[in-house]
Length: 279
Image (cartoon, rainbow, N blue to C red; front, side, top):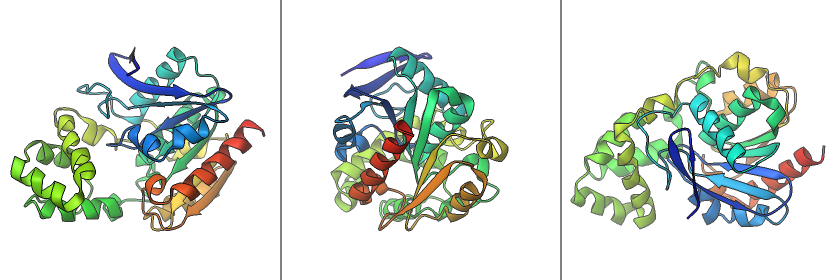
């Protein structure tokens, strides 16, 4: 498997295709597996050079004690792009991957052609979107963990989740696997390794990327929000404040559009990349 060293961390990555650069950034607690499972890399690589990598602490990348805020992960993003000779690129980010993409576009606009993000919650906009616990995946996860006699709070708290996953017994893991399937249960089991890090809190810090910074982004943005997303106020704020934004709703999806409506997600992504690379 291909790895590179950047910012005191070992990162797993994939790069395929030729043409204009597109970088895929997965969600918090996810990995490049989402792009492989949905055939996103393969499909986009027919026209573009596609780079995807596991965020620090995720997938096959190394776990570090710190470095999980969007500001720090933007540093990882640009270092990885430099090491892999990625030029001015379109960033496609799912959930927290969208925060990284937008933070990068604000930090170094000369390096980013545009950002396409899917159902992104911005810590810097928490004043208009205060209850992240509305997110359907968290409610579903709470329900599944309760079946294993593990209690999670109504408000999203990843630090608590990481600690409780780390402490799970083999019997609890078996129950989870029976109820959710082996793939989902294995994903949850990997989260325990983040218990010794500050990821659960750092990823939800504003990290110098607040309302003012977000609203100042001038580059092209395609905001994809799911039909059953709780983040409608965020979408409305972005539509009214960004100068160069288009937004679309992905039907039948509730925060996991790349998986829940892959066809529509990829259709919008391909259209967005084409517009951003051929303005």
